[in-house]
Length: 191
Image (tube, rainbow, N blue to C red):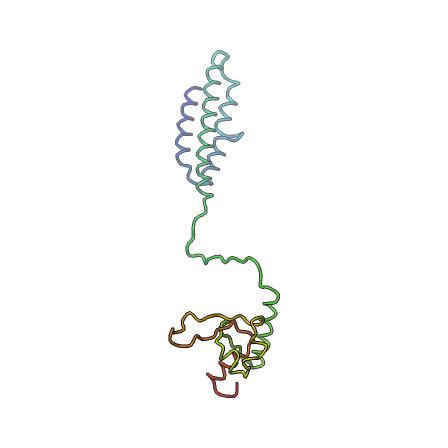
């Protein structure tokens, strides 16, 4: 019986070295560790062993079983951990961050612009900072007009104005008509 234990120990050691996938681990487990496996068959033969040898053979069988289970568990865990690590596939397209949505007012403006564009209109955009001529003078706002009051308009000094030249009057655009003036200067009628 001790020879059978020694032979099985060698077989188990060789089979442990062959574990390199989940399939091979499962085959090892079925061959050696289940109720009808090789280890259990040796335990079943214990009833045929003489009383004086049972203690020594039982001890050797238990040592083999514990070592086999321990080695199998370590091998399986190391293999399972390495297979659980996600492989980085650089050929996959990137993931976009889909947090939040557009503001309802922004959605409504976008829909209105699309409707007008479908009707043949175009959308013009311009800077929010405009010079005084395009914001007031070109639209025939006289210098004493209430829209030019400090309470209604935010005036800014032009940092790019020449020291010799009179400072240009810059304002935060007070209405969209300044954009229309720029379009009339740059395009032919009809607009």
